Image 1 (cartoon, rainbow, N blue to C red):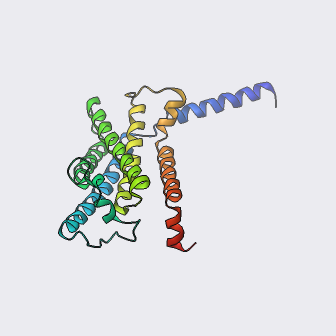
Image 2: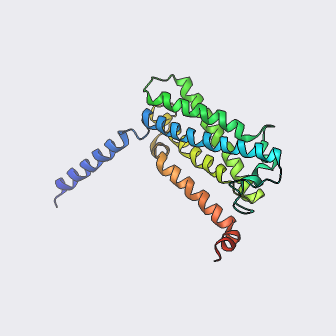
Image 3: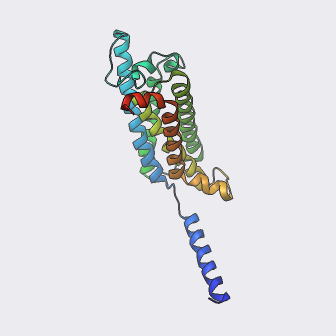
Length: 217
C-alpha cells in the first residue's frame, strides 16, 4: 500500500471519528426517557418502602415481603437511623424527588426548549440524589451489613439519571469539558455500566460469607 493510500485511510478514519464525536449521545428526548423511566422506578421503590415503614410502625417485629434473610432485608435497613437521615423517612423524600424527575423527563420528551437555569436545576436534583444514594450504599455495605431490595431499585434508577444528565450538559456546552474528559462524560451508558459493575463487585466481596451460606457453596 503506497503512502497516498495510507494517508487516505487515515483521513477517512479521522472523519469517521469526528462524525462519531459530533453525533449526540445524550439528545434531549433520550435523557427525558431515562428520567421518566428512572423516576418511575425510584418512585415505585419509594412507595413500597414507605408502606413497609408504616407496617413496621404498627408492628416493629413484622416480617416484610422483601425480608429474605438477615442480610437481604428491607426491615433491617428501615430500622436504622440512616433510614431517616433528615428526620423524616428517606422514602418520603424519594416519593417527591423521583416524581419530580419523572415529570421533568416527560417534559423533556416533549422537546420543549428548556432554559439553562432549568437544566442546571435538574442536574442539582440528580446530583443530590446520586450523592445521597452513595452515602446510603456505603452505609448499607460497610456499616449496616444488609441489603434492601427496594433500595437497590433506587440505586439502579439513580445512576443512569445522573450520568445521562451530565452527558446532556456536556453536549449542550453548559459543562465546558474538552478532549478525553469530554468523551468520557458523554459516554453515559458506559459510565452507568461501570458503576453497576463496581457496586456488584463490592456487594459480592463484602457479603461473600453470606453468599456462601445462602447458596451452600
